[in-house]
Image (spheres, rainbow, N blue to C red):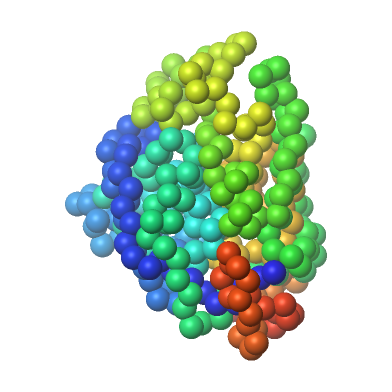
Amino acid sequence: MKAVRQTTLREQAVISGIGVHSGLPVTLTLNPADANTGIVFTRTDADGRDREVRADYRSVTATELATVLGDASGVLCSTAEHILAALRGLGVDNVVIELDGPEVPIGDGSSAPFVDAIDQAGIVNLSAPRRYIEVLKPVRVARGEAFGELRPYEHGLRVEIEIDFDTPLIGHQIFDTDVTPETFRRDLSRARTFGFMKDVSALWSAGKALGASFENTLVLSENRVLNSEGLRYADEFVRHKALDAVGDLALAGAPLLGAYRSVRGGHQLNHSVLVALMSDPTAWRLVEAPMAAPRRVRGHADVATGHLAPAYGPDVS
């Protein structure tokens, strides 16, 4: 089932914390927005005031340890993936995200704090029909033993993630799901970012992970998880990679109708596959949800079971 109408927040929501890489305090404010606004990041601090950037694959400036968005003036927002995952996972189409610093607050390292904030604000339907990006044919990017691919899938967004780490604490893990508000909340939203204690010194020397701690990162030694809480899911590592993929794929600019498979991937591969899709005008089309005869389904927004109709060709921005 596909939502018929676009959505936004009922009211404003505010989340404060620190950036996991910068270590700097930051406040993020989610603001309701009109139909067809999409997801827009804007800076309110003196260093970035009057700058804004759309959550779009063309705005990505770096993908090494996080997804970084910017423009010709430089970086505007780092570590955007967890808030993007929460918005796309819960089905929020239009929002203006204000930041008073260069990085989204890390919270507990998952999307759960953003889900809580969105729930508190509430989600409302708008009058405009929702638009989807429909994958028409498989698109694949391979890099050594890693590869990612998008293929047609008419039921919404599906993620199929596979990782393989040379440590018995992680090893080979596979996770797949259709991404709905229910599955995102239950199966993905609480999965935390993770890292290895042996890499900390090198990251600090590079000016990275300056805000990382046991409160916001799942930390591994050679033979155990160091966080007193332990794992939230037995396969939390691959679930977090799936969460990251949902956030990175949100940069398509509209919800995807497609299945995404990633093997040994990460932010860079996610972005590369999305770029490959959008660069091929025969691989996708923009379709519009039918507004006629919606019916109410308990626990869901208004939905319709009819086929989606083409809206615009892929050459229209």
